[in-house]
Image (cartoon, rainbow, N blue to C red; front, side, top):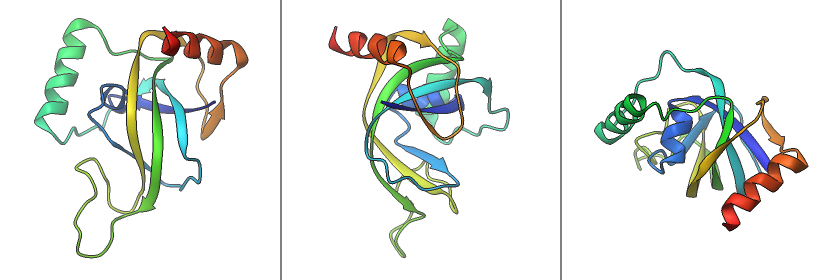
Length: 139
């Protein structure tokens, strides 16, 4: 299985099923299941675009539930496109113009985050981490 490292608060919003688009400067041909890795750093310039998202992050911060340096969820990449078709508007409130939009669906947060070092790009999980992840998903 492959993983994608994402800064907070974005990783938490994806893990919660609120954010359905991941914006990247590069496209992917990969479709299917990936692990969401919460980076060790936060996006200090993050502007959360929805009231639901702002409330979710405020609550998570109050509970100390924002995780860093760990696999926190799995999701499926169901498509990838650049911007949106002319005249259709944005494909999601989370989409950023000029970026590649990776469509995410069927997201499942892990009950217990799995500590892991992140990497750039889509990177392969070690056998041990993938085993821990699959054990949680099966349980």
